[in-house]
Length: 271
Image 1: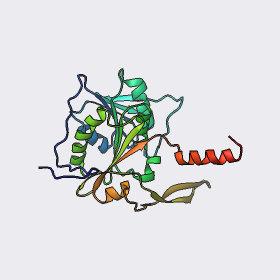
Image 2: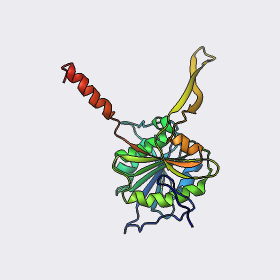
Image 3: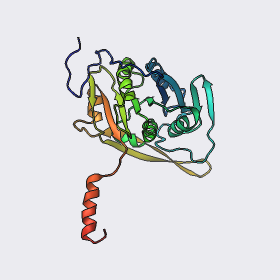
Image 4: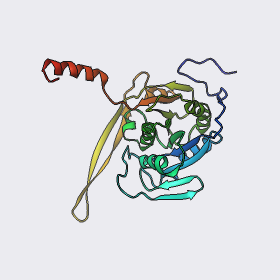
């Protein structure tokens, strides 16, 4: 019997909730930023078996940290590797745009991006190609998930159970428009699920200078990462052994600041 859980915690030992599918199977597009040959993408493909018609539209090469860049007004080569698998010579955002506008003759019902080989927590979402693909889907009005491991390949059975529950709910309209879910899978024993907010990543970046044999100069951007321990954050959840589910909304307006600026400008006679 499933144990009782709080509103923000789900016991993964409970059976997945199944919702009767529509007459036509939903079209699920899988993508990532680690490239079409990444193990995490193959694991994701297996994890969504039976949940809809699966297609992979992913970068031909590794596009980690590509963020939301896309190839404007440039030819993008698309190669059909095998039935249902398309390799795109571009970014994760390119993959979603080409899938939506070019490959399929019907609307896409869900986009899942991942499973990334490392976490996308806090401010990482600003740089992540994994998250950017899900953002592009949300911009197009498609329900979307960005999915990442804390430790590569660990807790895959929990991913299967989570998607078995979550995918049908998303297909039934769980999220509002222009909203997506950023999910991170912890390492070690899983204690449940927490619905979280983005935490704050600390980047200790360095630009390492190197002199080239021809007299030129180059820099390598590298460094270390840490995070602020903030209650209710995705960092807190994942490092405590919980799957972190963070809803992201694409309205970047700072609404409080908007009202404050209006008042300030009004006093100055600017509005």
